[in-house]
Image (tube, rainbow, N blue to C red; front, side, top):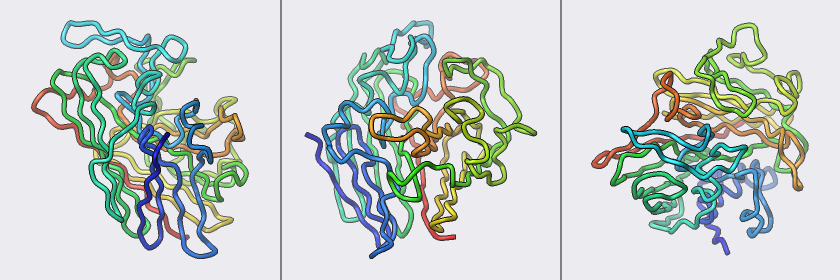
Length: 314
């Protein structure tokens, strides 16, 4: 069984499951205004059969790797194929499906640790990973650190589904979203990049100014948004505003790209578009794409990335 751990500040109470390193609840506000803004399961065991990666730490490589394979330094590696012959979020036995150990726990901070052995889901190298969750005021920071004994691609992220109106309280169509990016990665029907980049000007993808999702969903596809936005030199930034409740979420990360997903494929007790995901990460399939730089971690180096989720009132 998964063990749940809670960390707190004066305005946030965050519950983390050691199974999958998952964000299980994020309660924002105090007293009668306290609201869980995160989709999650009431039954902890349900996370083991969860097809939607609810709240999970993603690894070794967030998003998709085409053909479930890549080459590195002249050697070919075959990965676990868990989506239409491709690898999604590290494979069926990725970090979302592993039990993490607690390295440190305090009122405001939790550190989880995982050792991924050489060959795990087909990836090379023994990888030692730490995920740190910390809260201060209205901000939750998730930071990642990893070391390896063989060169390996790595892209870690988190997969929370947010609904600022409250978990299970309708769809996110009444949320306004802005993403500070003028470019998206062009993908094929299976979500694998073609190598091209598209400017968002005069398209439904232009979210540089806030757009109420109800005005554009289900476009740009029957399942809405599931697209990768390219960040600038400082990383990625996004903002979500829920006018009916007056709540706002601001995201900032040093990752080079941001996958925006509006939850169009949610099912199993969750309604389609019931939550939205903002997933800072490397570009999907980067190990196979010469147009995009992949993060290759090598022995002696340390992978470091972080994500800040800041909640306040408008």
